[in-house]
Length: 104
Image 1 (cartoon, rainbow, N blue to C red):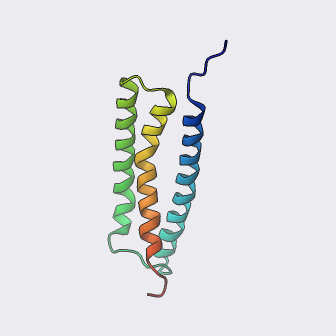
Image 2: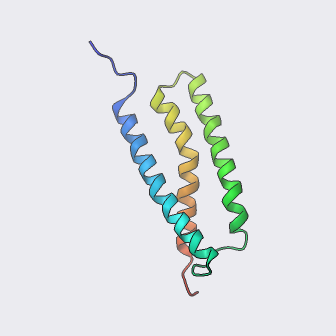
């Protein structure tokens, strides 16, 4: 009998999270790029935030994945722990940047 090493629902949850992360990241890149061209309003500290937030999110993701692994989590649980902080950052950025209105 074949036994799954991961939970199929957990795997699909990670697929959905990564798909949303990619879509939100593309929206954030577009809005920040337009902001650099002066076509989209962005906050004054947006340029430095682009760098610092990535380091924080990735560090938190690696730490959370490591903890999940050491606690004996399945591979999909470890992946979910790594994805979550990055997804939270991209989701928050997309929401924040989309609240600015061009021409305002």
